Image (cartoon, rainbow, N blue to C red; front, side):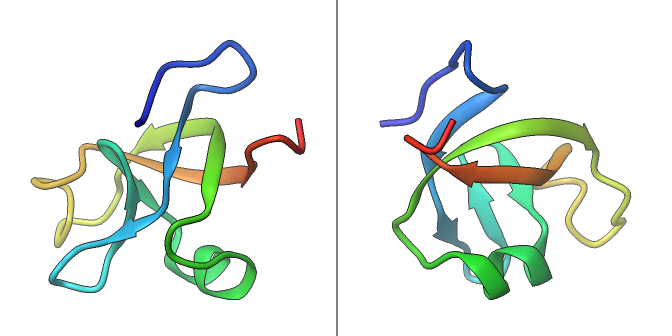
Length: 74
């Protein structure tokens, strides 16, 4: 369901893992931003990604996105 896209870095569905982390494909999503603005199952486009600064989740998610939006709102 997820795919590379020219309108953003990546496009896919918001999911949540057993540790409570929100993610989309291989990318960790910013927890507070996701919690405040989205819900599980939303289709989003990631605008930017950075190296994951969190030691706790870096092994599972090497990259993190802090800027993303609902797909179709490009």
